[in-house]
Length: 571
Image (tube, rainbow, N blue to C red; front, side, top):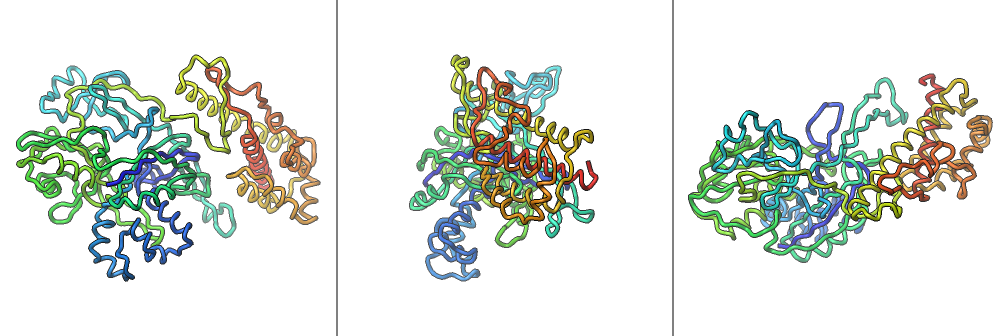
């Protein structure tokens, strides 16, 4: 078995939708599903070789990498019955594990076991966690005068008798309005308001790919590296990420680290799910509560389950096949962190445990489902504390938000992690100030009736320029907007020349901001000079050209959008 590890940096918010929440909103997982990584790699492979979706299924290298078909020309019916294909693709022996948040030490975290509890009155940091899966656990003694409840943190790392808990950055929550595709705007018939709850930008996640064929590693390494797009709503500012390769593992690689244990007969053992797991009972139905017969069939030995020390929950899972353009069948899965205490009737040696942990259990293992581990946390009590932030290095942040930071001499006493954290905090404070100052500019220059922009162009002309701005925003390429303005006919240009904004014509205002050497200072215009930028522990975001271009394009877009609303009488 070959192991490829990598890390993902979110340059934009990421929307990996789960089947939860209000029907008018989409809520993201707090991790990056392996299915998204797998789908992205297939798409990249197809682009590199200029293959259609049909040709992908028949390309010999692609079959070996992703579908593992025989080298002959197989029909769709033959593919479904081909033993090699079923073994290497449908049975999940090439496995794209979920990407979980990284710690500041660049270590991949894991879902927190459900069996770990704390007293309700204890603080969320630096307290005692009780392992309810331990044979000596006494609930009444542990509770005392209080009650026990889950730890409330989705990810963790266990180190001897200490548990470090982690929680992703607060999600990015944004409200959107549905648009009519033909008219390009919201209408009364198609104008529903919906909400996206996405993973916030600026976070690091760590993923793993397990391969049975060592020849596939070099190809996948090339496909993995560099910028990529994941998740939904990519045209709306979601999904841009950067992927960096990590170290390569070996046959004895274990997901949680350390050596594989042996499980002696008659001795209680614990099974912890490291990802959601889709299991089927003896009659083929989805497992909602794991019983001894089902677990015995998956482990290959007879077991008995201790229900008093086992904790599990279920969650629905679906998906969407972009090739078929159809949703996948929904099914229930046991949630990550579920802990089952069982006693095997026969011994499971280290080879059997290694095989089970590396292969996983259940369905959709190629997409990261079914990851398990045995005897992970065996202590009766642990001290737990909150872990450090997920920002792990001085690597660049999104270009549109200023991609470099400099720390002043005042913060030399900080550690490297501290300086980096201060820079990130300063950057986020600056972005919030920019949002506020742009809103103030639009209010004073466009919406304020005493100083309102006069003679604005028709909304069709304003919309034309806003389309150019949306094309330019992802890269900050102002030449796109300048070229579009140059192609405006004389009648449309006259409308911009007659319009008045910021004590000058709208045409002059646009070209002054969009020029290669701008004649208008956007920072002075929004009243946010460098001297007023926030600092944290002496660290301040650097005023680079990428950040200036981003702010310029946003200011123009918000100003024209407000002008269009004024013309419609909505402001």
